[in-house]
Image (cartoon, rainbow, N blue to C red):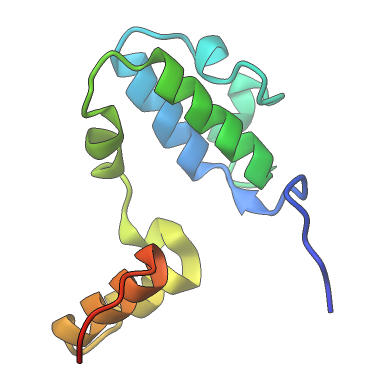
Length: 116
């Protein structure tokens, strides 16, 4: 069994790219968005770039600190395609029953408990 820690660079950079782009739309530089992330701006455009969970969290912290729009997280979340979430997103897209999919996704993603 392989144990992956929060500093292992295994995640695609697309989530950070989306946050940096959303902050740029508010007038912030990539350097501001990536402060403390230890990632060069040019690495954002490479599909080969991988980031760690800690880098992603630091970028999200920067967004929370910098963003002026109180709905920043919501509006930025709309920019993400469900496929960004990997095999989990693919499973949701491949579902044949919307109600069961939403029950599964809500339960898994948010720990929601629903009555059967």
